[in-house]
Image 1 (cartoon, rainbow, N blue to C red):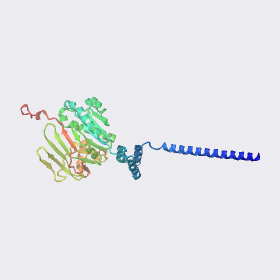
Image 2: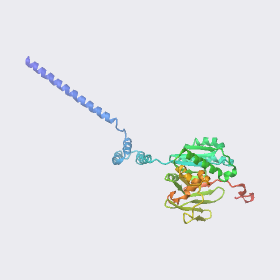
Image 3: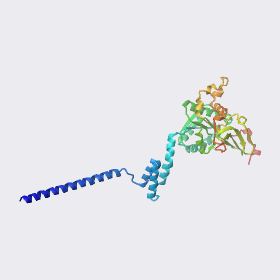
Image 4: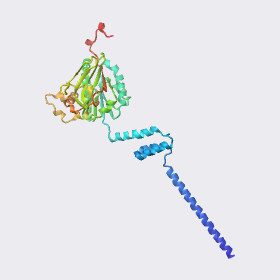
Length: 359
C-alpha cells in the first residue's frame, strides 16, 4: 500500500511540473508575438514609404538605403518622391534658412477715356506674369478715383497680393500725354511705401512692359540700386531702341543708347561722358530703404525743396550719382530681359493726314 501511494505522489508531481513548463512556454510565445506586433505597427507599409522616409532623413546612410530598396524592388520605386526629396527638400531648407527679399512692383495707369478700355486687359496680362514670380511679392496698382470699382473687382480675382492706391487729383489728356499723371502716380506709390516702411526692392512695371521671368530672380540680388538694358518699341512706328547701362561684369561703367531701326548708336566711352540726365523708370530698381534714409533731407539746400520732396525725382537722381552702388542686370548687361511698349498716343497735330496715312 505504501509503495503504491509513493508512486501516485511522484506521478502527480511530474504532471504538475509538465503543466508549469507548458504555461511558461505559452506565456513566452505570447510575449514575443506582442513585442513583434508592437514594433511592426511602427514600420511603413510599402517600399515607397521606406523610400520617402530615407530621402527625408538625408545623409549618406539614407542614400544607401534608397539604392538598396531600388535594387530590392527591381527599380519599382516612386521616382517623383525621390526627386522631390533629393532636390526640392534641399531647396526648401535653403529658402527657409535665407528668406527672399520682398519685391514691390508698382504699376501706374491712365485715366483717359481712350485708355480705359485697354486697362483691364493690360492688368490681367500683368497679373498672369506676376503669378509666376516666386513670393514674397506685393503688387501696388495706382489709379484715379473714378476708375477704382472696376479695377478693384479685377484685382480680387488675380491671386496676387496687392495694394490698390487712388488719388483725387485731376489731370487733362495733355497732362497724361506728357507723363505728368504717371509721375504723380509713382509719387503716390512711393509715399505709401515710405509711410508703411515696406522694406524690399521696388520695381516700376508699366502695363506695356514684358519681362523675362529670370529677371525677377536677378532683382532680389539688389542691395542698393540695379539697372538693366530696356528695349523700347513704339506703338505707331517700326522702331526699337535699346537703352541701358554699359557694364564691366556686374559693375556699371556708363550708359548707352542704340537705335536698331537704322543701326546707329550713341554711347560714351567713359562713365562720366555716358551719364544720362535722367534714368528711364523702366530700366532701374532700388532698395526701398533709400526713401527713409535720414541723410535724404540734408542732400539739398532749402532753396531746392522739390528735389528732396519729389520722391521720384530724388530716386532717379540718386541712382546716377554713384555707379559703384548700381548693380548691372544681368551680370554683364549684354542681354535684354525687359521690353517696354510705348503706348503714348501721338497728339492730333502729329498724326498723318488722310492722304499720307501709312498702309
